[in-house]
Amino acid sequence: MDFQAISQAFVQHYFRTFDNADARSNLASLYRPESMLVWEGNQQQGAQNIMSALTKPELKAVKTMVSSTDATPATSGGVLVVVTGSLAIDNEFDKPLSFSATFLLQPIPGQPGGFFIYSQIFRLVL
Image (cartoon, rainbow, N blue to C red; front, side):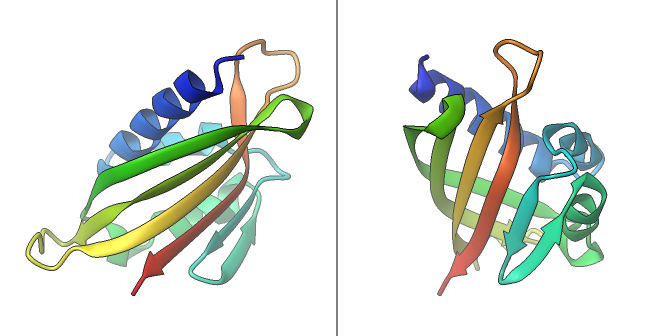
């Protein structure tokens, strides 16, 4: 398993889709009922609840810039991915906010080469 290639492709897809408010709902396909998100300390479980958190009105206009992506293999064929970067909200590019995002990707049963987000943690770094 090329966990580096998996992590790079995932991060590129995830943040490109997240940055597009019209396409962000497509991220729902990356989550399953057992998926967990902790966004700034607020925990959500399941694709519907996670998408409610990711599509809040205050996140309508977001532009992320990924600074680093690190990955390691994880148990059960998974991939642990840690991302750092900055984001601008409402096109305030002069006020970027630093963030850290951690993803635990797990294989999708019955879909060789496919992964879903089992766990995700997002934190602004102040």
